[in-house]
Length: 338
Image (tube, rainbow, N blue to C red; front, side):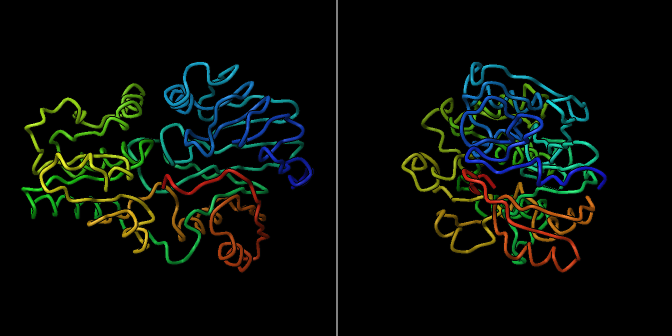
């Protein structure tokens, strides 16, 4: 590192991570003058900022969720393009989490910090893959920062869903998915597994799925459940819905609905029971334990800051490699959309 240590110019504030020489926050938890947003999930992207810098995909999601006037100024920046904010050079590179998700690469007087936002390392047809960038400090999430979290291959989990559909052809498979990211990813995983029947959507999933389509993501035919005649109980079909709808009266219209939940948390049996899942599928949009450690190796950062999740075990594992690691407590971070 030839320049000032990032700890002298990247600060934690009540609003979140603040870059002093650039005059902006990254994923602030409350309205600020200038914000860089890594992706569209609600614990990172909020309305009310004076100006927002983000990828076109993230801005499209924010407009869908919060309206066209969700910030004073919305400024799009493509992956790989650089611009100056104050004294800091800023670049966004893919994070592989959801559509438009980005890492923030910051360079100031010869030192470089990378803020990962949320990320994953597995292939995903709905977003560009994670791009490792060498840096002096890597600021990472740790949603699944425990050794127990080792996610199986996505295709194997989708194969379990399709096997259940064959075993119970008279039942409607209702799959609990988060509206942003998980819904669209499950659709593309089904198509990759050669399932090409229409997939039916709860109304809460339609708008963001349309946003993905408008951004060029192919997901096959989807039909809102509201457009299906009440006499059709959708036996043998797949219906995607919010996780909260799995135990709701809404499912009574279906043919002996079989509740399925797709989430990284399905590794934890208690979570599966709480979510009313008869068939839990471990499909995550975050890096698992091994991928977190591999990413630290890939970016080759001598120091790692951990923003949210299971920090203690990851700090211990990273420190064992000779790197410095510490928790960076930020308010407003959740682990629900996984």
